[in-house]
Amino acid sequence: MSYYQPRRRGAYIIDERFVGRSMEAYTVDGTKLLGLVDEVSVNEIGMLVENSAVIVPRTAIAYIITGQSDVHGYGECCEKEFVLDEDFIGSDVQVKIINGAEVAGRLVKVSKHEIVIAHENRAYVIPRSSIVYVKILKRL
Image (cartoon, rainbow, N blue to C red; front, side, top):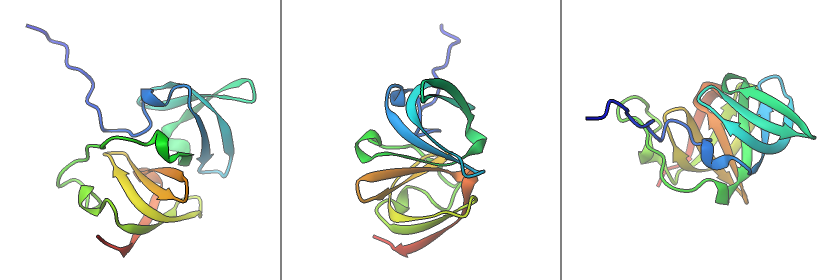
C-alpha cells in the first residue's frame, strides 16, 4: 500500500511543462519581466531575465503572455466552485485586470487558479486572483 498521493494536476496552467519556455510576466505593480521559465512551484515561478535569476510570487502576477501553442490540453476546473467554468470555453470575453489592463479574446482554458484568453497568436494566462471582472461578449 502506498501513502504517496501524486500532486493533482489542473490547479495551475503555468506548471512544470513551461520550464525552458519564453514568457512575459506582468506584475500587479506594472513591471514587465521577459525571460525563460527556469522553475515552477505552487507559490512561485523562477525565471531567467537578462541573465539574472528572478523569482516571482504567483500572488504578484497580474497576467502572463505566452504563445498559444504553449497552452495545450484540457484544464480541470472545480465544479460548483466558480461561475466561470468549462461551460464558457469558446466564449468571447473581456477581462479587467487589477493593474488596470484589459484583455479581450476567446476563453480557451480554465483551471482552479488561472484562465487563458487567446488573442491573435498570443495566450494570456490570468490568475483568478488578478481578475476584477469578466464580461461575456459572445457565448457559444
